[in-house]
Amino acid sequence: MGIRSGPCHKFSFQVADILRLNYHAAMKNSTPSRKETRTIHVGSVPVGGNNPVAVQSMCNTDTRDVGTTVQQIRKLEAAGCEIIRVAVPDMEAARAISEILKAISIPLIADIHFDWRLAVAAMESGANGIRINPGNIGGKNRLQKVIEKARERMIPIRIGVNSGSLEKDILKRYGSPVPEALVESALRNIELITDMGYEELKISIKSSDVTATIEAYRLLSSKTDFPLHLGVTEAGGLIAGTVKSSVALGTLLMEGIGDTMRVSLTRDPVEEIQVAYEILRAVKSRNRGPEIISCPTCGRCEIDLFSIAEEVERRARTIPDPVKLAVMGCIVNGPGEAREADLGLAGGKGVGIIFQGEKILKKVKEDQLFEAFWNEVETLLEKRRSS
Image (cartoon, rainbow, N blue to C red):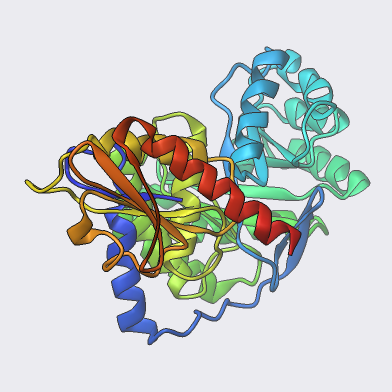
């Protein structure tokens, strides 16, 4: 779900439009073929193979605060999040996982750094997966203990390689975290774990540099068939993070690379989910929730379109149905330009119309326009769900 609107709008998805154009030019309207990877299961969610690209996020709450963490996860679930990750900085956080899992519906991954005991404790608390960097877990013997626990419970492990945490010898050899260095680190860690007889793995190699991320994942994809988790680390706030993630993840997805994804934003994690599904929609990979189109406005607009568009977006956040809604500033850009929408509204001077295709359904006063429009949306969804 997303709104295409003018520069004054606080939440722009114009990048999705660019990706659509690139997609049509490069793929000629065909759906990109996925690279065949192994299938693993993160709880109830199958990852890899021919399964849909799964959308993840990470809580920014204190995991030890079970109530607040559960509240955030439930909001993420409603937005379409399919796998959630939580930080595990200490044993209290590891033990809290068991209580969190009782109150949520999606699989939970424990994010572990430095202490192998936290990984083991998180799995004993029921975590559906763990994310580790094998190089900082405390040595081969301690990693072996983590693998033994994962094997005992058939819990998948995500090997997370970051540009900021490369092994010293690799960094010294390459001089900087170039794509080849990231891939060498990933392959080294894959071999380390597979040599221990465990292959329930998912791999990520993240950089804050868009081109480095794309090149690294392309190279890694050519060298392994383990499922890949896509992301741009430290991508930034809403605008910068959306642009970086859209370019990097969109490019890779159009090339058939990627099995799970997270859009990292310095924002409410719910917005990460919204951007993720817009990227997936743009590359014709998945289509969840409303697509909202809106005009950029001009001097002909005589209603407060920004407020109406934002309210439509807010109400639509928890709707999973793939419905197309149009929010237009005037009749010039109304039924004609938005004829492909399932439902639309257009403004006039203190009034507005609600239309379906080129048919005008009703005309109402401006202060009644949104509620009248949303009533029509709910009626349409009820009809579709019951048919």
